[in-house]
Image (tube, rainbow, N blue to C red; front, side):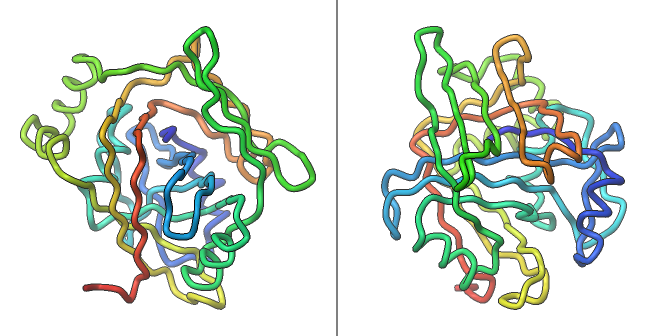
Length: 245
């Protein structure tokens, strides 16, 4: 996951027809991020995913704390907020059909090359559309543990007890919100659950981390990365909004 922000005014125009509002960062941008996943074991078969999301609320004018880790913390603690799925790509026809026809998401087909480890310790990633045009590409430096400085920063933002609670939990719970479509004509909050055996959260480092965005709808809103998180193996459950059991 790559966390960051985009231009607030441009994003507002992009989601003007939705019934949710972007959550602002302390600097006045809109909180947003990418999720890249290699699901080796999944109910619908192994597949890859790229998602671009923005943090949203049903209330206008909500603001994040002033921390590069405020977005991932909010995703795990602010259950009155959710991530609006703006763009979604998969490489399985069955998964794309399921995401679109059942969950009301705007999934499209793409080709993935994710997390190839290089001799310099970086993990490369590349996602292209079906015509071979690059959507995003880049690399991130692999880090095996979360440094104390990052834990301290997150503790100052959310409180030490909250960070320890998140770290010791069997899973994290959040909400993904669909864009309005004929399948789901309203913005609905679907519960998600994530877990992993290993998770590392750290600052984005422009000297070792690279992100190039070629998809015009994404590059035009000026995404700026601030932090990232590795999770492996990445376990993920997405439930339909009507599934409240």
